[in-house]
Amino acid sequence: MAEHRLFEGDVPHVSTAAFHEHRERAPHLEQPVHRPRLDLAASMAIDASRMIDRRATVSDLGCGDGGLLSLLMAADIDCWGYDFQPSNRDGWRARGVRAYPLDVFGADRDRVQLGDIAVTTEVLEHVADPHGVVRWIGGTSRYLVASSPWTETPESHDECHCWAWDQDGYRVLIEQGGFRVLRHETVGQFQVILGEKQ
Image 1 (cartoon, helix red, strand yellow):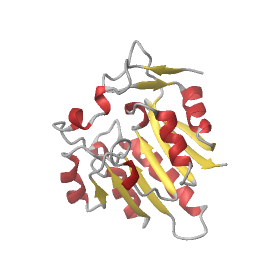
Image 2 (image 1 turned 90 degrees about the vertical axis):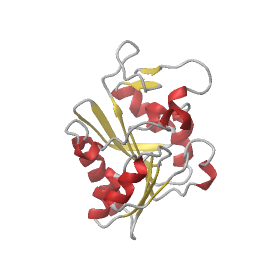
Image 3 (image 1 turned 120 degrees about the vertical axis):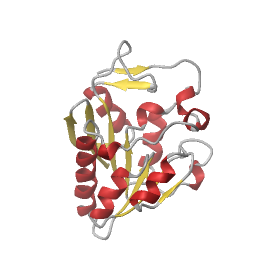
């Protein structure tokens, strides 16, 4: 099992609003490297919604420009998202999704409404305390869909990432938050997990 902390100090600069303030919108849904992991994450969220005996809700924590939300809306899922990068707001309007400009894992955490299913795709590797985030989600949401690269190491990783996990390490991260892993699949350089609260 491998989990690697890739930053020094308490708060990594790449997880701050100041770092994201002037970053360009990243339309992952239209990017060939990211589309397959978004499709897989959407299918896992849809599968989880079918295990709930009423119309399920999905909250996308770190929703980017709303690409995954648009897939869920097309499947008639009641969903919304949060992201604090200003450039992503143009994507929300263009895609017609419901999203809010909040710092989910920082100053605005108390204002976040978690759904029956919480999604954190390409998010946990950017935050200061991924273990705490997964436990926080596990306190409310019944299901978690999460994704992260599975091929990164301390020697070879995206410079914006604070953490890196292999497959065993990522599974342990999700399980320590109180989730039982139902599905764990790789697609390209990404791993995607569907967990159910135990």
